[in-house]
Image (cartoon, rainbow, N blue to C red; front, side, top):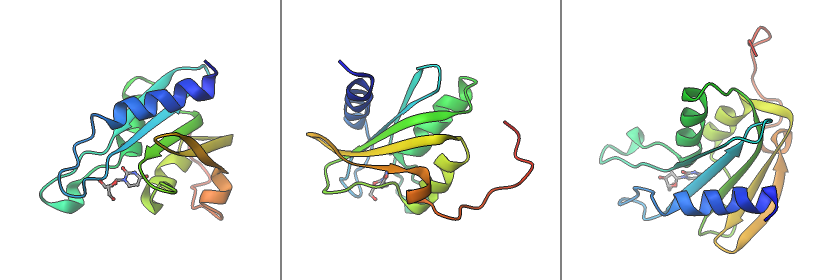
Length: 132
Ligand code: THU
């Protein structure tokens, strides 16, 4: 299995764990760091809707908690024509993106489109002195 296919399978598998009783829209995300480590997350909704966390947020939290700070490749899986990361998650991913991060957007059958970080979030806000 290719690295990308295993990243897709990891995102698809964690999607099954999503807690999304309000939207009924399950999302899984898998991130690969430059050293090949994979972190996953699913969306976790809340009765107070804004408290909900996107799949990408869970995956980034797991990555940071494990001491990794760079994302080299990401897959987001949702049962939709194009489950692109929301605006907040684009900013969230950008914080930790390598210069060549590609975000692959998938449905349950596989990857549908792939985006560079700059395509997803052009003219992104960044602090000059952001530490690596
Ligand atoms: N959602 C994600 O988790 N990631 C995305 O990339 C798009 C949307 C979640 C948020 C909410 O729980 C549900 O999908 C419906 O918007």
